[in-house]
Image (cartoon, rainbow, N blue to C red; front, side, top):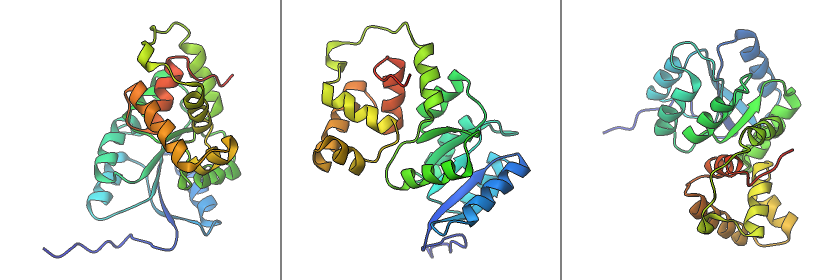
Length: 225
């Protein structure tokens, strides 16, 4: 079978898809991205349904900026079909919602980061830079709020306790540092960082950085206050 031509595909920069129902904000983000040659907005949509239709028609992207309060299918519900269709894309929640349940629902559905819209355009671009370099952005206001919410936690089994180094690596990941930056910060090799993260995944019974960060915050292992 002949491979379907992908009319959206770009090879010279990082492709970004924006899913946002607020037209003014959507335009502002698109204009911001247009001023940076490293990124190209290859699609902007007001609904999840339109986005999924475009993906089914050949749209590909490296990064998805996702609002949660969408008409029709909401952003959290849409994370699963997005990941099924584009498993290599990085999904960054970009929303005004700071509701605790929405934060955890988004992270546990597979979002790679959670940002609040109040941030500046410069902050957004910096976040995208962190994402393409392997970081996992989590707004510090969100992380602190979540920590305060989960003061009474279930006991952690002995096998789930993180070693001091595992805890330190996970803390730096949650702050948005890349693996390379963590290796430099702790003066260890990149392979050691990967080993510590894999052990952390096993202890927390998760399979990704966002899920590990989410689980650690809920269990009181990370303090962003």
